[in-house]
Length: 140
Image 1 (cartoon, rainbow, N blue to C red):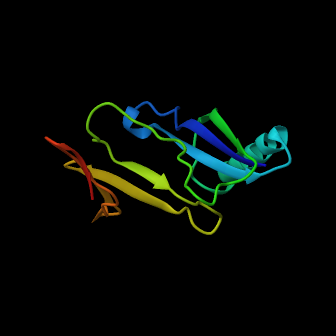
Image 2: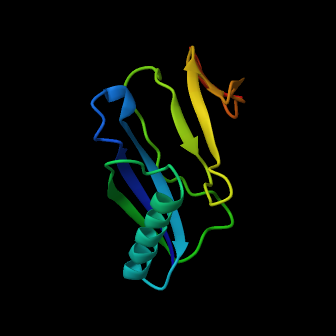
């Protein structure tokens, strides 16, 4: 079975200044025999990152917020997972690490400028755009 764990985390909570404390979320993916094996592998991987990287620094707490289980992945259509919507315009920059490992942290700095992301200092590439018109929604 394929398991995707979605986790929330807080790091550097010992810091007095809020600007020095961090929070966020991440996913772990594993092909495991069962739920218990997946959870064990998730714990091992998190511990590994704590010991070999700066991803889970300082006083850190990690919460499993969702566990998805798939016996197979469809070939005809993509599966949407972990959609998140937040109130307000995006303001604060954040660090995103797509595929961290021992060799590289795979991290990028995402900053927002007029509701357009800047990724490592470069404007984000628009992938899909929907506009609302008087006679409906258009898709580009």
